[in-house]
Image 1 (cartoon, rainbow, N blue to C red):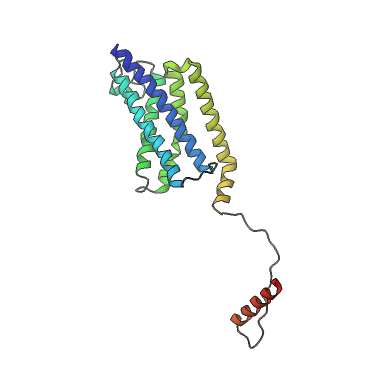
Image 2 (image 1 turned 180 degrees about the vertical axis):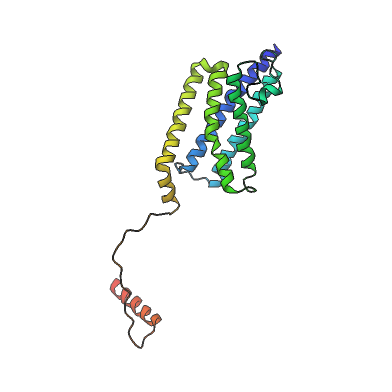
Length: 220
């Protein structure tokens, strides 16, 4: 009975971890494409993105603990830390091992974001996309529930959403970000308006006062 409990823990926590990774990637894409037009501050939105990633790490830990504690599959530390070292489905399990290291790299660099160059952080953070696909492959090939229709349809929906947002980010998102940050394109050439000549004997400040007085007279 205890072995079945740990097996259920490993299965359920693995599915939850996969869902949290998907939610974190989707939320990050929504932030980067500026599709979210909500009232909360950007700090709150970014904190939620980090919170989802942190929860994914926690449930991945539960998943690994359940595998090691389970007596049916006979996983040990070597099996869950070294690719192709598992005797049970070595290929599918290897995808999970690689995903584990990618998840660790993304989360550790996120915690150290203020201490490392931003270019390095950004390059490692982009591995989240690769992590999403590796986790999807791992769940589809190694997961016992891969044939469950709810799992299948949930996976398909997750893949469609991530693909759609990624395409939007690559094709349209860049323009949206430029407009939102005020980075307009090159100005179109137009006719220059020559400055009004300054009469002799008058200062530039006096000329500006005369122009302001004339403008207020026309507005009356």
